[in-house]
Amino acid sequence: MNQWKIKVSIFINYFLFAILLNSVGTVILQVQSTYGINQSSAAILEAFKDLSIAVTSFIVASYLNKIGYKNAMLIALAAVAIACLAMPSLNSFWMTKVLFAVTGASFALIKVSVYATIGIITKDENEHISLMNFIESFFMIGILTGYFIFSFFIDDTNVKSSGWTNVYYVLSGLAVLAFLLLYSTTIDKEKGQSAVEIDSNYVGFFKMFQLLYIPIVLVFLASAFIYVLIEQSIFSWLPTFNNKVLHLPNTLSIQMASILAASTAAGRFIAGIVLQKVSWILVLITCLLGAGSLVLLALPLAQNVEGAAITGWTDAPLVAFIFPLIGLLIAPIYPAINSIILSTLPKNQHGMMSGLIIIFSALGGTTGSIITGNIFQTFGGQTAFYFSLVPMTLLVFCLIYFKKLQGKNHLSVKLSAGGGH
Image (cartoon, rainbow, N blue to C red; front, top):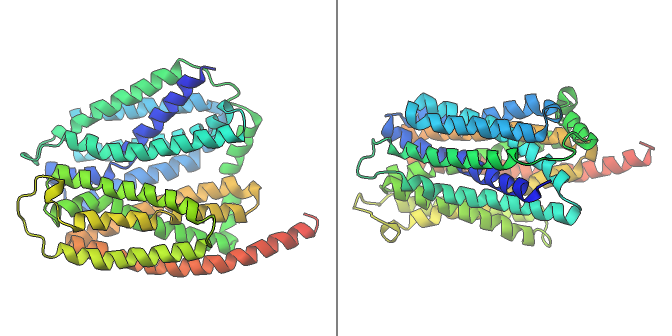
């Protein structure tokens, strides 16, 4: 195998999809100006992205071992390349829906295939962990870079211009490059027995939904749903908040949203260190209380923002720097609870649990964006972000109950193991 080609292709895959998937907030802002779409209508873009990920993951994962992981990734890259090329030409709101639907479905194929491919091209556990971390880091770099790539194509002097859609020519080029690199190499053993086992577990439809009878799984899924609802409502609507409430130009509104991505990355890095020494429930509850306090402290600063000319970062109001730091506080929650539920359940249920995580996370993201968009349109941007206090409060109670059930579940697993299972 030409492993360097495979690895470079995988890195470009993740970089590309990080930009596309997390551009939904940028595109929500732009379609309002370019196509005259209101906030509640623009919010539907999140559903096209998230639900296509969930549906594709649910339906096709069991067939990936038959298709082959390389072929699945090639199909995904080709679909995205075509959709990106079509976007500037068709240049309409319905095309943005199609683009996000194609992106979501393609990412589902990419993610499952990439995870399986990593196991094939690495020699041992240390190399596997190292490559996985590099890939996930590239995803975060893609998110950060995406804000600046999109802002480069936006014309603040003509907010109704559709010139920003030319960014998709660049993204299509990245997809073609990744396609050619992957096409020119071979992935050995991509139809191996381990892959078949993983996939069959992953979409064991009835067995997967039998997990819903387990109380700790229900509480976890509620927690995951609520967390993603909070996260996506902020990620997707921060550029619009910066523009409509803080009166920043479109380009600056998008660029300053990168603070949220950067603080989220920093929060997960710091939490990785802290959680080795401090109880997860204490860390996560503290983070939620801190996030709620930040909402109450930062949003009032947006009330007295005047519509004065703002041309750059140095002119931006203080709240534009402070509020995105909420990412630092909410970032540790999702990885932590995912790790906890997987470590609590038997290994043969991990694949099925992963399917439920994808589905409920997608539903949470879509719900959060739609609710926030409707509140934004009806009551304004400040009220929309104040609403995040409601799911934050619910999440505190869910996590406390989750912790209680975790102890009981560990005990039941031990007793079951002692009974000869």
